[in-house]
Length: 469
Image (tube, rainbow, N blue to C red; front, side, top):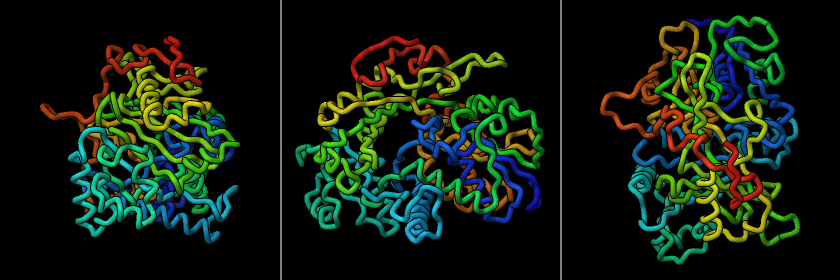
């Protein structure tokens, strides 16, 4: 579409898609960019316990560049890692220091990305990843856990702590260690990006009636004209844009957070980022797997997540259609319960591999994402609607692209050549006849994943069952 650099552009949503887009628009000279969000992120600092409720508002996210045979995503992730490292340097030097930051704060932590399995050494996905890392000269960053020579090399490079944190027998320690990966402190990364956007001249309207958007109006009643509106509303996007039916759906991941006792130095040391890696367990094994976790943060919190089953909350919408919507503080008083299935899988893993966490206090919650049927993002103009672009469908792996995702949004706006091939994957699309969906979506209330069919746990227990639906 044709825009001048001074044309008014409004972005709805200050999560990863919205923040990254705002930064890249400003960097390319667009001077009239405004971001609206119902959440007062400057005050809450993207912290869930301070009142935030979005997928981007989280403690930490996995940083990996391994994408199996999908080289275009691998290249995008490698570029993202380099930019996260640059952000670390900007903080360290004091060049960019948002309020509340110190020069010792980091955004990207390179503590390794460990993939572990039970029965087979490497999955095909891991085999393809190792091969494609070697193709770009990074073969010495991928170590097969059951290969003694690889283990020795990983130890020599300072990643001995990440080889076997679950203390399995060496011959049964199936999987691969990626020493290129690690984690991103998500809330801190969003705070940094928000500060960067504002410093570039982006206008922020966060919190209250002025930032709360519904039915294409803000609740303060003020008209805001835009030549282009970009919908980047995370888990709310499918219910705000019904035309996404069949392409995207909101799904919930299960999150548990264990609080290490303040006086237990042994536990704090064991789970410190310098002693414990980011990890994935049976990540593609369906309902019985799909676990991932992190080292502790500065407050002693250890996060373990589950996406083996992606839960839905199908509800009848004003137009009569049934769509999944997030369960948040705005839709329900209690948001801390987990489906018993998720709690059971997490508990069994903790009992077997991290039993020291069982004595810790624990909180839980559902984290709502937007999945597409093929696990690719959606960055495209909405068909038959002038001046409306959709940026969504992160599908549980979008956060890692915070530094560079917005480049592609602006490329789409400006009609740039799609040299990476990614925008062609992220176009508006539908499931073709005979095509196999990566994610099952739009199954409605009859779905076995629907929360209406789950027994939920209490927030402070992995064993107590309480039916809440």
